Image (tube, rainbow, N blue to C red; front, top):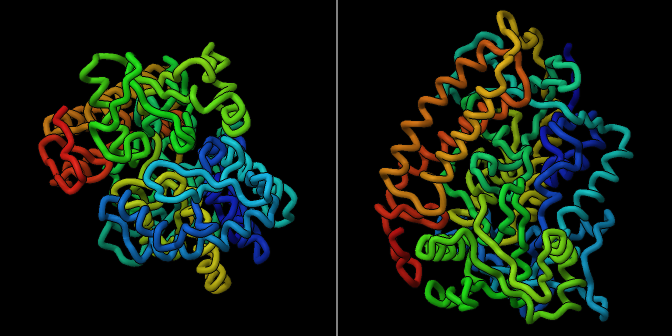
Length: 529
């Protein structure tokens, strides 16, 4: 079955929804999401969205903080553009009805997070992403030009390769014509043709055993673009959030927002002693890469599974009014954060690399855009500054929409696109082949490609991944397609990229810390682990 739309959007987080709303006035939009529309990483974003609001803050300070956090690998022009355009995008959200917290005086109640020199983070209690997602979906649901296909899994983007033409990474005119999409309710594979396609599928946290990402974060968009011979970059930079709630076997790991540390919560060991002063002058408010490595080192030294975040001194009134979600979650597992310290450990959180795009979100494939966590814009460099991700999504989706609208009327639908060929495939009746391989993959990535790496660990990861890659490709080729086999394949593809990029980097930088490739540009040289 074939379907034609003007604009195809894969993903229903802030990047996909904001893009869809901007282009919808000019043509038909189809949003494809593999779960329910609100099951996105955006919904899990607790802390907020960074932007300059009041003095003494300034654009220059926000730009400087972003560049410092990115460890000199950000594209300064992109950082400057994104920060300078942030105010208009925030105003747009507010005009749509997003309710950011305010002080009794009517000013926005800004918070401060690790790496920020000023208070500049807009928030809705500790549920900012959920508030933004809710408002955007309200507008999506009532728009006459937008169709949302929930529980539909995008398998691959369509290019001239599917017309029998040879393409490789040197081909400079690869074009995207749409995507093949699996209807999970019927197992039918639909061919959706589009003049313009936006990939907004989020990250790949589920390559690791412990992650704050929802189960949907399996690197789908990045893997699809890579298989289509698009350009991917900076995959070695995996941000581990320093403070996920330690609660064995819970998936995803519950995020303890960085705003809690911004309000004064302090990291401590089991004896109640602080330790961050050993690693950075900013202590518990150092950038995430530094805090995550510090915790990782302390855990290795002590042999423990978790440390603590102490928020007791903040008082019950502040904790309940500003962090109701964290308070309720901890209470549900028997921890009263007004009286007890919170057990925390690092968890895979955010992918700073991804599909390479330009300042308009254009990928190396014509008529294909990417925005959000799956995209590598140059904004984050080697480490993302807290609360810059929602902002980046808004700015690049807006700019992608502008570029799309400047050319889409001239784009013609391509005839002769074949439907998905499932000839010779059979139903896989041994799910253990998928579930066990996933466990293997997550174990490999967690053990060898985590917060601290080495050349030997990376080689072992590559050697083992080559085996499960071959096994999974063979299984994929002969199986009737399901979401699980596709997700596994995508996670293996993305993990392979992470390892290869990590092996190619000859220095420790930002989120990539290799004990065989030390670098001393930070104030203090880190430790060998």
